[in-house]
Amino acid sequence: MDIRGDLRSRWEQVRGWGTANPWAVDIGIALLVQAAMTMPFVVPRGPELEPATWPAYGLTTLTVLPLVWRRRAPLAVLLAILAASALYKLAVEGPGQPLPYTGLVSVYTIAALSPAWQRLTTAALLVVAVPASVWLNTQSARELTFSLFVFGAAYVFGRLQDARQRAHRVEAEQAAARERARIAREMHDILSHAVSLMVVQAEAGPVAVRAAPARAEAAFEAISETGREAMAQLRHMLGVLREGDEGTAPRRPQPDLAGIPDLVARVRAGGLAVDYETEGGVRALPAATGASAYRVVQEALTNVVKHAQARRADVRLAYADGVLRVTVTDDGRGPRPGSGGHGLVGIRERAAAHGGTAAMGPGPAGRGFEVRVRLPVPSGTETAEAGR
Image 1 (tube, rainbow, N blue to C red):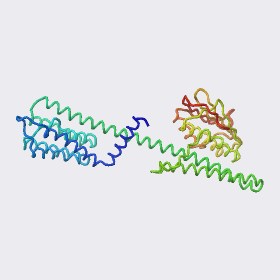
Image 2 (image 1 turned 60 degrees about the vertical axis):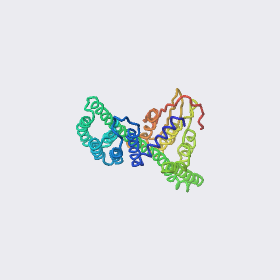
Image 3 (image 1 turned 90 degrees about the vertical axis):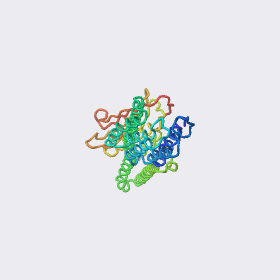
């Protein structure tokens, strides 16, 4: 991992820790503000300035303490800070602060976390409290302008943080929806393909037992192999999804172009004559693209087995001009309403995810059905012939 990626990862860990430990974060912020407000009490002061007394420092701490509860009751915290600050101004002669730290933190918190009515109440309070504080201090227009500016900036930063958090939540929800759709496609492809082949083999089994025992034995072996393969893929998927299993789940690679010959062989074993050919020196694809190409062929063949009543199918992979074209054609009865269902939708979604296209319709001369998918292949990949 590069330095930037490592720093980003560490920052995400810190943010995650802060989200899980809000009390610790708020106490840390209060301590940091307390340290900043302690500076005027420890820095040497001239004889003409107010003395730094312990009662004054105690009241300063009293203005900081409410920040510990800033998330739980932000408006109440602001009122407590304003009251403690007014008491400091009226009851003691202590060092002043270069910035109203506690008030700024409180206004930022209200702007970032509170509903609209609390934000409006805060604005009304500041309209009264800021001029009153300036009048008790220097009574200068310069201080009034500066105070209004810094409180306004704290409010704006709080609103920006709220907008950012909302955008992150929307992004997280969209990412979760995309992940659910991806998992649904994977589960559909695995189960639909396996169950379809097993049903075809099981339906042919009784006839084959009486007429051709050797063929029946092969059919039952195909059912067993298809079931084991489906279970293995499902275990892999569920193992990766299971929380906390990232380090122990089997790291079986996703299927890719190299797995298409075995896929074709399993479909052939089910009784469908399938021809597979490649053209143009099909290239080694990135893992995600290769897996999508495999799933496209798998779903297209599954639809042939389930819906087409075909005798044969042709699978063709052709690479040219930076594009992999996947074509699956059958000689069956052609499309009918409701056939394919989620599978054809999944093929379109897979193609779109890689910037490609998918088209389905009648085969050559209007006979059968044809699935045509176009997947862009990133440049720089090395040429590798796909096995038959």
